[in-house]
Length: 282
Image (spheres, rainbow, N blue to C red):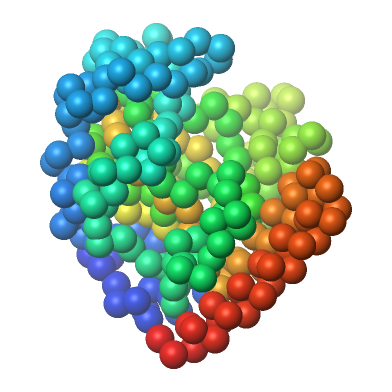
């Protein structure tokens, strides 16, 4: 299987051909009008946001340090990864550089005016990832909360390896978290330990700067980079995965108490109904 590539798609075609049937797609031109393309470079972040700190494996790195490590990174000694920051928290003034936002559905329910912030609280919405040569995501996984995903490459390139949801049976989901695979290296898997992995069908693709990939909930994936890389990641919440999102979120809310979880879930159902009515007129 190969992932379809299009320069851009009309919203209705995108919805009916890819989002609703839950098929991944690459859009090569949809984000090229963003100011971030060409502006968001390692040097830009080092100069303007170098003092920001982020902790990986118990050690804090400033963004300036991370950029230096990105420049020196190699396959043998890669820079720490994932180094990911929530745009709205660390540099909200840069959100305008990501306009116009891409919408994969009748509306963007994560940022819908009817969506109470409490219902989306704790779910990263806009993230930027800083990677480099030799960097790779440390595990194969599919995204939490039944969320679809939009990834736009801002600087450099990033290679993706995806597996269809039906391949999950060959990926040895972890007992403690079935959204994560026990297979850590899809390029050189331990087939003695994971013999069924040979039946999985990896799908490889590479994003260049300005290109966007959409992949639906349940699609397993990992990434690796061959050089300095800056990537924007965005959750996609719409009518196709809203109920599944609420169900998964409810399991998390229960940890704070059943009453609180029930109230939040009920509010989510009411809000979902209101958004569905609003979308009927779009």
